[in-house]
Amino acid sequence: MIIDAHGHTVAPAEVYAFQATLLASRGNPILGAPKISDEKIKEALDGHVKILKKVGTDMQLISPRPFHAMHSIKPARVVHQWTSFINDIIARQVKMYPDIFRGVASLPQTMDEGVERAVYELERCVKEHGFVGCLLNPDPAEGGHPTAPPLGDEYWYPLYEKLVELDVPALVHSASCCSPRLSYTLHFINEESIAIISLLESNVFKDFPNLKLIISHGGGAIPYHTGRFRAWRLRKGIEEDFHDAMKKLYYDTCTYNKDALELLFKIVGPDNVLFGTEKPGTGSGYDPKLGRDLDDLKPVIESIDFLREEDKRKVFELNARKLYKL
Image 1 (cartoon, rainbow, N blue to C red):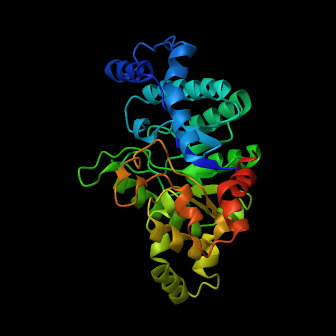
Image 2 (image 1 turned 60 degrees about the vertical axis):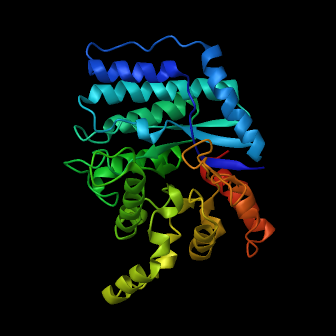
């Protein structure tokens, strides 16, 4: 079985028309969710399902698109309304295709408040909708100011406590970016890199040994610069090797590059990597040199000759089943 642990929703235009209305009104007065028919939602979703079947994906964990999360928008009620609305849309999509989709919640993170609202939405989505995990944005300011504390800070502990209590993982995935110096794609890589180092240099896994965190997009830049961080630890007299520390976290395969994937497997091992493609997503461009879409990663992983068949099964299925209780 092939489980894609990193997918995002495909929704009808009416969903994003509501988002535009929320932005224009700033959520004032508080708007009720629009009535969108099952037919409209299924029409948009059917194309998504066809793509998954074409590339051989049996199940995909879908979440709201991080690019649309709007975490830096004020007032916070706009973020609250949008997040609960889009999570509810995904719950409807999962019910339409219960054998194909599982829900992963977006959290209403803002810099105007702590993580309490995010904790509430996580619990609501898991208990009411049966969602199997959530997205965690390490930078709710979206490249602006003030910034949130790094993920190793106790600021995040109430959310970590709830993740452990519910026994669900979080996919660390930043959202859009306000900074004129960064595209959102580059912002992703920066935030993932900061997240890894912050977590591994903190007491988070001493305080929450059962916490399950997956770092998006192959772990940002860190798996490709481990020598520098191993040297840093040696200079500081830290006994735990950096490669061993990295195995406290999990990583997805959304790098769209065979050389990068091979290095990721060599650094962290197949036990800590989950198949993820975002397909259909930003990597869907067709590469005429390869003769396939860049995010069609199943044949890429199958072609990595040093991975044993049992390793590939872990990456394609078993690791996701273990973390997400599928």
